Amino acid sequence: MLNRARVKLILVLAAGALMPLAYAPFSLFALAPVCLAVLLLTWAEATPRQAFTLGYVYGFASFLVGMYWLYISIHGFGNAHPLLAILLMLALIAILALFPAATGWIAVRWFSSHGPKAWLAAVPALWVLTEWLRGWIFSGMGWLAVGYSQADSWLMGYASIGGIYLMSWCVLLTAGAIATIVIGARKARLIAVAILVAVWLPASFLSSHRWTRPDSDIITVALAQGAVSQDLKWQPSQFVPTLQLYEGLTTAALGRRLIIWPEAAIPAVYDRVVDYFDRINALASEHGSTVLSGVLRANPETGAIQNSLVALGESHEFYVKRHLVPYGEYFPVPNFVRNWMRVLDLPHTDISPGPPDQPPLTVAGQRLAVTICYEDLFGAEQLHYMPAATMLVNVSNDAWFGDSIAPHQHLDIARIRAAEVGRYMLRATNTGISAIIDPSGRVVAQSPQFEPHLLEGAVQGFTGSTPYARWGNVAVVLIALLVLAVQRPTTKFTMRLGT
Image 1 (tube, rainbow, N blue to C red):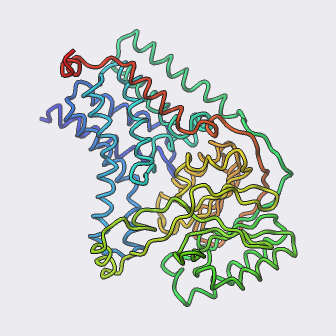
Image 2 (image 1 turned 90 degrees about the vertical axis):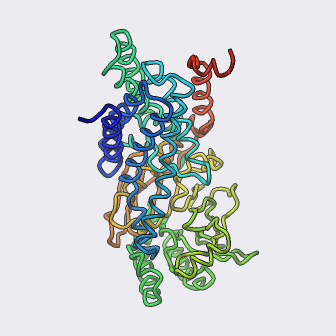
Image 3 (image 1 turned 180 degrees about the horizontal axis):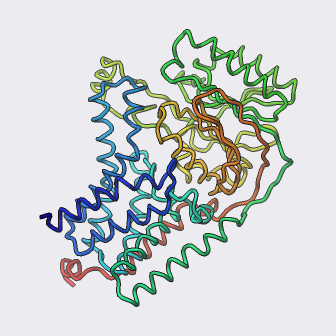
């Protein structure tokens, strides 16, 4: 017969493994607070060590199921040995699982972990703080933040108020209310129901509220999706066909005000293809179009390679990617490890980041806030663009994820970035999912995956500021700290302090 401790482990293992179903492409958003409520209930009356273990098992299962595609990136396209790819994937997941584990340990060690006080106050605030910490410490990895599960729910209305972490907080409050309703006293259950109403009813109105306003005429756009497979992209035999592919897509889009190609669309350093870009620019200019393309570029001063976007025109203007992917675009390892990576034919050369305060690119009468690929995971880092920017542009290459759930998860990340600042998002990707996203985070149009496609539509520039664009994450973090500060410490903790 299973003892109580093993039952709890089985419950959190199942809840963690089911949690990714709340995210795209499944989008069973109601499952998120249910899974978290299971975790909260298992923390009740646990010791700090038990809460850490339960949180770790939950987190490991959740990240393993939700981010299994790391293996595809590392082995399938990074050419790492399968065993090495598994070890690297598990190492990252093991680190990410520490955050929900730490939440449980802190809750039990320093705060109450049982009852409405814990489930409706301390634990949601702690979770938000540890999730925020995960989003920036050691370069940050905010993928699968709880709030991303709510891109299709009413809670999307809170994106413009407090960003992704306010959305996460609301999910945790909902989970706490569920836990309270399950085993709480009558009075506590009434409070939990009131909190559910207080969280979800305003969200239904906020989802349709617009903080920003259109400030330009409607312009036509086209997003060119080349669908060049990652394993073929950099082969010499693919170079000329790729040039022809994007020239053909551009020719079909002539007359559209903006034509956007994906990240590193052309498999060459910019200096090698300047003449090609000049020809494309001349062709586009004749028809009133402007082309933007992701491209690798050698830093004019240092010669270091940079992941960039070029806006073609009378003079080519550049945005350089600022937030690089650790172990993907740069390698914070000692030289002997780098030499070992070279021997194993693994990527080992660093890409150089761009400056952190690059201004919007002024193109086609719009001021474009540009991000490249995984940069759109860091919403607060884009706020320096606001309120000057009128539109968001993200170019990406999700071919690294293969035919997995990751491109769908990445699309929802972009949707929340659009809603946070109340701007259209134009998302051009290599293999999909390319999309036009409106200022509320709704997908207006999207491409099919893994086939060449020209996604066309019409958008407007927007001005003004959402509350999140003004405050960023500061307000949510400060309120979470305030909630914890007013919580009464446990008797054990006060005794240890000698009070």
